Image 1 (cartoon, rainbow, N blue to C red):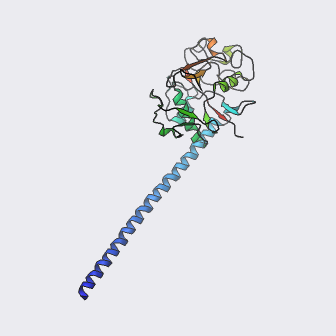
Image 2 (image 1 turned 90 degrees about the horizontal axis):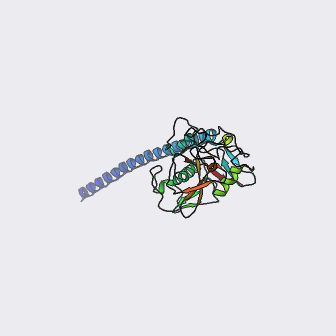
Image 3 (image 1 turned 120 degrees about the vertical axis):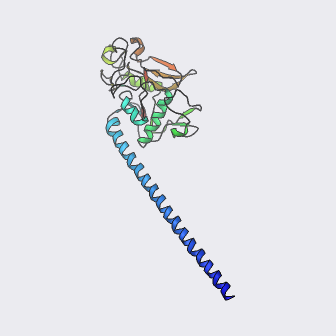
Length: 275
């Protein structure tokens, strides 16, 4: 009987020691995973800070112009190659060679994705959602592949992130508080690139005269996507490097499908002014 008790006690002790050994291993493993997770999270936050600093210093510092009498600000130039690639990680443009060329060959969908990604990068609330999701990685959409977002894109007009201008906002800003035929002048050669002076290509932004609000290239260079739609597609405004002068007038607009891209079509961004 005593022998059986000793054997049982020995087995119990062995079990306890084994359990303690397993616990130590599990604990050590948990510490390693936790340490790696904390390190990854710290690196993620550090990267976000670095990106935010570059975003502010390189692309957004003084770049958003408050529109007088309105509650929104607008980018003073079209989104450039460098800016677009910084946010999206790639540049789909047909024309290359200079970082300050306006980005083109972007669809309306691509522009919307850019806006949400930029908002997150800048610590702002994204404006657009698909199926109530603002995270573009959950939209089942890959930019620059000629596809579309199968479900509707919704706009939260109260969010403080970046977005496309409405047709009314774009045209109001393009007028610049003036009564010129084009944005900033009655002489298109002073303010814009069109088929009469472009040399069949886009040009770096802000090379021509600005309008009364300090906005560049709202007549010519590339057409610019807007938020608004009709029964056929989405609107874009302003004319481009390969269109005649009358298409570059302030009130000029066209429409196309949201997945349409062209080497004469880009965009600029707006955001609500914080109250």
